[in-house]
Picture (tube, helix red, strand yellow):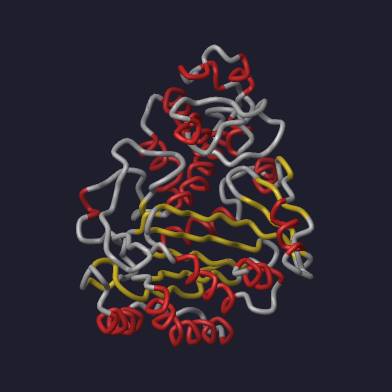
Length: 368
């Protein structure tokens, strides 16, 4: 069913007005919010995306949140709307694992084979090389999903030798962690991450309190789809959360709350270099391209001339998400969109929030 544009615009304006969080006086942050308020309704209508939720982080705190548009047909999105953040689940799961390491419940370098071996790779000795560190830095040698290789899990290369993004790797580690802790991932996350961080509106699995609060996906034409949930928890996909909860997570992660110095440094350090983004940037004529890039423990890192950036994207059908933060200047943003064209809206918003930065040029080049 197509979105009624007049209803979308009305809900955008009313929701925005109702969801302003008064920050400490900050004229620059306020001016950015004003700019977004003026432009987001037009972007949503133009790209046929039902809603955009944004949390802007400045000086290590949430300066403001903005929520525009519809969470479902005829229902305005609010700060309490729950979005499927797709692969933004991975940094959350990675942080949970690091909390277990900090609590001496496990090690980053212990072999996963002591507690879990996937039957598909049991006869391949390369499974013995898998460790939490290799998984969290996306160097398992697995494809993204086993369905990409005909349904059976297989190694494409020896673990640890190079980078390849893999949801299967995160799921492999989840099975190990659940056996190690003798508990499901939702319970572990609640004890070691969600409760300590104050993330009370976040879950790996569908909960009763989701009712009436979920953002429905929409296709390229703005037609509504049906939300999908995980019944047991997936380390790589389908965490539901609010934009405020995820911003809280980013801030606490940025501050390294609860992590020892060496562990915090390891989390933020590139574990396996990959130059594809830098190469693509230069090929498109970029002059402020990343000088280095690679995967940390749960995040992708780009080192720009004006400083490092950690980020992650999430993409399921009709649901898109983006998180980015700059640790040196303690700035960042979380963006959730319930529409297949959501990244187009995120780029527009990013160009407003981070104008005149190296990242802004990177975003502009991504349109080409």
